[in-house]
Amino acid sequence: MKAWLGIGSNIGDMAATLDRAVAALGAVPGIAVLARSSDYRTPPWGKTDQPWFLNGALAIETTLSPHALLDACQGIERDLGRVREERWGPRIIDIDVLAYDGAAVDDERLVLPHRYVRERAFVLVPLAEIAPDLVIGGERVADALAKLDPTGITRA
Image (cartoon, rainbow, N blue to C red; front, top):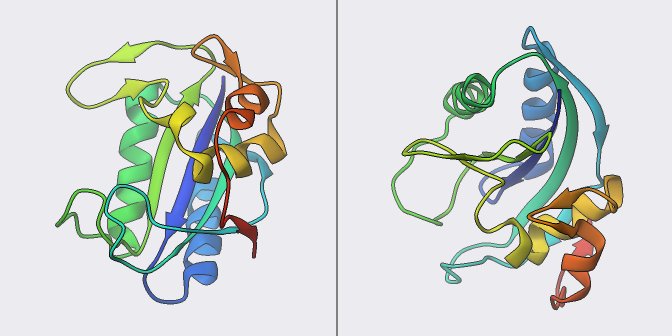
């Protein structure tokens, strides 16, 4: 199955952390990284009094279930030093499962497609680079992005 992930960091050597996260994902049995967007410098969203982020997107092929994929992503976050202290706060790494081959999941651990994906330019700009025609929530990524203001988002 194909899945799409968002990656981000705003603490430390962000580019190196994103590289480590991508390498770690590719090393997980059952995950093959198919495409990686450029890294983008993006303003914080939600909680705006924090450093800017470096964000990107990945397309992967996986044999893992959506929940097993989430577990793998969260394990990599922990391995790279992520501590969940504050919602939308600063983080060394964030790996979000954005969509999973059309799967719809809505439980206490996982919502797919990601509930905010079509509202966040910092997610859609890199995702549109690698999957502009991907349909999420009935809308193409490129069309969802066209409705948003990507001001401040620049390729790193």
